[in-house]
Length: 479
Ligand code: FAM
Image (cartoon, rainbow, N blue to C red):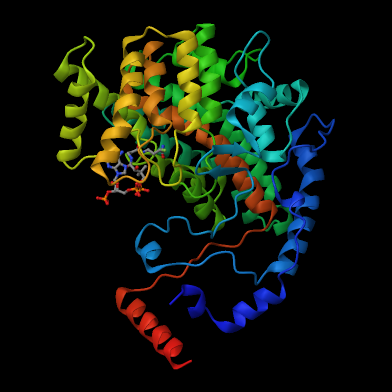
C-alpha cells in the first residue's frame, strides 16, 4: 500500500486542484539578479525584503495546501533525514553536486566574489552580502561590510574577563559557546523587544545584532586561542585590513598565504542549507525570538558535536594516531586499509567521511585539495590525505554501512591549518564556528524578515504511532 493512499483524501484533492504550472524562475536561484548601487547592506535589504515578502505571500496563498513531501516511520525514527519541512533562503545542498550559495557553486564564488588586490580567494564579507541579498556584491559593497565589521569589533569588557577566567583546560568550543551567549548583554533585539517594538521591525534589530555578532566573532575566537595556547596578548584590529586578515593577525599569523587560506576557509564553512545541526539549531532557537547571540550560541553547541563540526578536530586526531602507530614514512595502501578496518571494527566512525545529504565528494573538500595542490603539494600530511582519499571510500563501501563513502569538508581542513603552523587541533572547530556565523546570521535576518513562526513539529510515542498506523491500515482496507 502506498503511503500516498493513506494521506487524508481532502488534502490530496485540495492539492490536486491546485496543480497548475508554476513559474519556477522566481523560485530558483538568483543568477541574473540586478545588483543595486546601494553600498549599505541594510539599505539594500530595505529594498529587497518587501519584494520577497510579496513573492512568498503570493506563492503561499496559491499553493499552501500543496503536498511537498511524505514521511515514513523510518524517517521519524531516523533523524528526520530528507524530510522537507524547513525553508532556508540562503543556500541549497544538492546530494550530487554539493552546496550552492544563493545559486552559486564554490568555484563560481571563487571566480565572481570580490577579492583583496592581488588575491585569489573570495572575501567572506562578499559571501555574506551574497547570502543576505542574493546578489554578487561590488568591491565597494564588499568594502562597506569590512568597514562595518571592523568598526563594530570591540569585545565587551565582561566577555573579555569571562574568557580570561576560564580554565585553559575548558574546551575552546565551550568557551566560544559561553562568550557568544554572553554577548546577549548588549542585544539590540532583546532591548527593542522589551520596549515593545512592532514585529514588522524585528528584522532590523536582528540585522544589527547579526552585524555586531559577526564583527566580534573573530576577536572572541582569537582571544580563546591566545589565552589557551599562547601568552594571552592580542594585537589590535587594523581598519585597513579585511575580516580574515585581521582574524589571522589576532591569532598570531602574519603571512599573506595564511590570510588567503583563511579567506577560503571562512567562505566555504559558512552555510550548508538549513537542516544541518548548527544551522537548524540557530534557526529553531531564533524562532522563539531568542536574539542572535543566544540562537547562534546554541548553534555552536551543536557544531561542537563530533558527528558535526568537531569532526575537523577528530580527523587530525585520527591522522596523528595513524602516524604514531604506522610511522611518519609513506606506507602502503594495504597497511592503511588495515588501519581503517581497525577503526571500523572498534565500532568507531572514520572521521571526515560520510554525510547525511551528500552522496559525492564534498566540493568544500575539493577546493581545499586544489588549494593544497597549489600551495603545499609536497606536505607529507597532504600526501597522506590524498592517499587516504584513494583508499577510504573503497573500505567504507566494502564495510557496507555508510550511504556516502566520500570525504566531507572536515577531512581536509586540518591539513591546511597544520601546514601553516596552527597545530592545536582542539581549536579547529572554533574556526568552523566563526565561518558558520555568516550563514546562520544571514538566515536569522531572513527568518525575522519573513515573520517565520515559532517551530513546533509534532512528535509521537511508539504506542501512539502503532495506533496511528493500525487505524490508517484499517481505514484503507475498508475502502
Ligand atoms: N565511518 C564509519 N561508519 C559510518 C561513517 C563513517 N565515516 N559514516 C556513516 N557511517 C555509518 C553510520 O554510523 C551508520 O551506522 P549504524 O547503522 O550502525 O548507525 C550507517 O553508516 C549509516 O549512516 P549514514 O546514513 O550513511 O550516515 P548518517 O546520515 O546517519 O550520518 C554522518 C552522517 C556525517 C554523521 C556520518 O557519515 C559520520 O558519522 N561521519 C563521520 C563523522 C563526520 O565526518 N562528521 C562530519 C560531517 C560534516 F559534513 C559536518 O557536519 N561538518
